[in-house]
Image: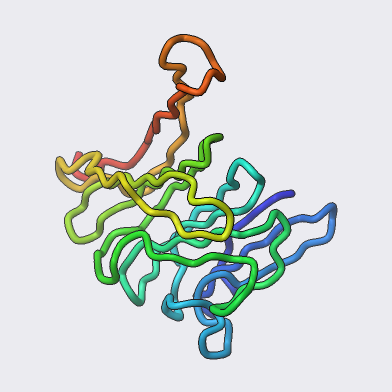
Length: 193
């Protein structure tokens, strides 16, 4: 599969597009799908900044900025081949990462490590800081419970256009024995210098 998060025509909806062996399928996963409640609690111009990845089981995970509510949101498929989105039922679990009007979430970079832990970096608009959030794997169909909130860089206007990858660090030098750590490596724009 190939996954892409893209704008939806003249609206600011976020669509998930995947290539299923040459057959392209799309799902509106953020924004106003046209009927009340079809796209969860996010605003009609959700998803203007987004990033997509897959978890260890191959399910797509999308982090995006909800401009109407000024917050970072996340949606995660409950299957590797999602076909439906909606506030009641569907193949996606929507959630806030932060409360509405946190003014954090532009330029997200999202990764999921092999243990299922999610890692997100995002730009905090109100202060110009680069932020990092992380949560353990909640299991299929459940929302993430974020346990790590870190200010990565706050020296001026930092964090726009961030991109992150994970460095696999075996704590004792042996890979795959259960004590491996996945450390974020983040590149970003320093707009102050």
